[in-house]
Length: 416
Image 1 (spheres, helix red, strand yellow):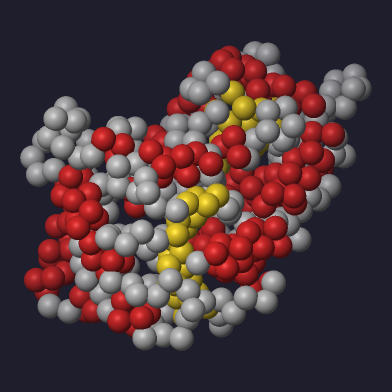
Image 2: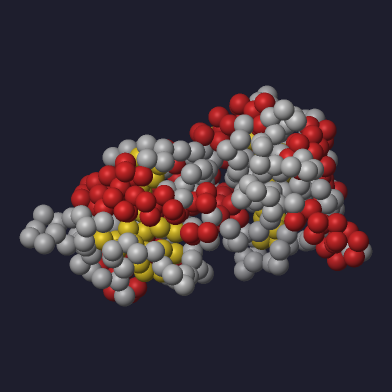
């Protein structure tokens, strides 16, 4: 079987795809991962690049650069028209793979027409909304349900309708439905409501996490390694770009923390995925910035050092940070949006706040922190794991561990 992904480690979707690949190999599936960047440090991952236009005529490279600039719209979400052809279809169709498993391939790896040319049985794991939208990867508009017409175009858009053009090309080239996999129930529901893919088969299979590596360690020991205070309650937030991506909701987190100002004097916020800005926000207590972490061990230490992980996203599928936190026995606080209810069972593995209600998010942060406090004078952070931390870990092992997810994928493969 060939798993096709833009990359194996760069970005959340790539990391999720690689973990699925490793989980399948762990149960004996002959999975080979094909990526479109330099080979990774894993012999099961190959990079037989078939995007000929990258080193081709200057005119084609110029056209691609123009299309990429179309992403800079008033909508801050990334856009992918996926128009440049490649040699991937002929390579995959001639390969000995029984199944082609697509992951995050849209953009510069496979064009829309390329996907329609695949002849072997295909499974496609969706990591965002792009497959059934126009060129958007996430959107709060509803054109993907109604069809992309002139009458439902948002008022903030003007000029060439990139999304309508991209959506019509998908309708033209994708005549044969393929087996879809949605990592969250929310994304599966979106598929069933979409104008483009409502008749395509879709199965919910979550992303996988190696619970043998991502596991808890003694909290104070983790804090000592990271030079974090042992006497404080630590709230963790992280995402690629952290505070720069509106979809990740860092502004909503700051608003929620405002409700706790003066009430939780022992609180500390730890941020990863972003370096310390020139003018950090004034929360009334310190913020520890860890920048971009390039190894999983450091990230695991951060989870283990923290009392709670907060994911204040406005829209998200099944973020890896949530699975990693649970596996390390760190409860998660989030809004009840997107695929986050698949991670957070309210007051069992964390706290699920009302969508975009920052006061409820603050209540959830306080509630989770209270569960991890020792009932002693001064209430310092516990070095042992309580019932909520154990429940978080149990959910990670039961729902998202490699053997559990790999078997679910094996059932999907057998079905097709």
